[in-house]
Image 1 (cartoon, rainbow, N blue to C red):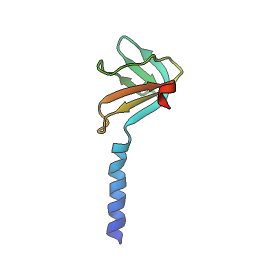
Image 2: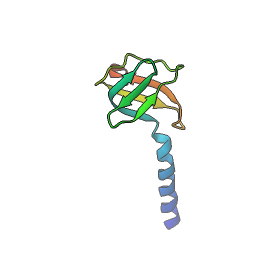
Image 3: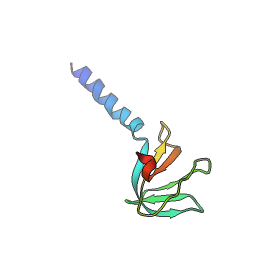
Length: 83
């Protein structure tokens, strides 16, 4: 029984990183030239040139979506797109 609980806990721990594939927050800074978005809390993200960048405004909610590994930005959503 203890082995089953341990295995379930280990699975939950390691699968959490795969589920954390987005960043959400309020934009505090945006540099259109360098395509850098800074969210409240200080996290900054450079959006690759091959990713469509919607109109981004300081003060709006935004969602930055990553690939399954969490290392490549795949999409940026703002406002109504996030629904």
